Length: 122
Image (cartoon, rainbow, N blue to C red; front, side, top):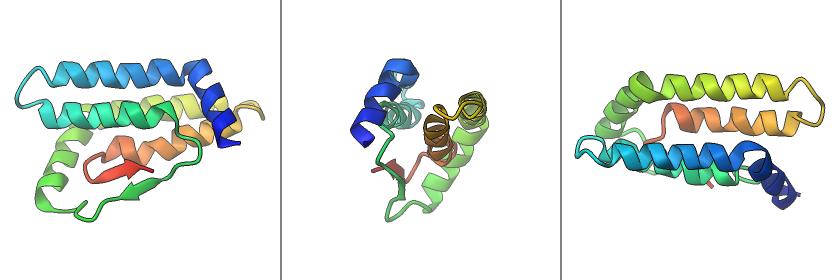
């Protein structure tokens, strides 16, 4: 069932969103300072391609000092806008019964969009 959900997800917007994350990540990687943030953006793009059947997993050292600082910088610069986009998409999709599973996938991606350092979608 998750395979069918992922295919429908890709057809109706997941591919565009994932490519947006990846292109943004590549642009961030053009600067030395932006490389860690670009890598996280690319990771979000890959995770966005197939969210069905996966869950957000916290890594072993997810809350060390450097990752916390990077997560705070991410939240201030990028995270809040990504979260708003996921929330708006979830609300729009939740209007119909057919869109509810897709709205839940947007909700699932919010913690990863807020604090990507030290977390993965597996």
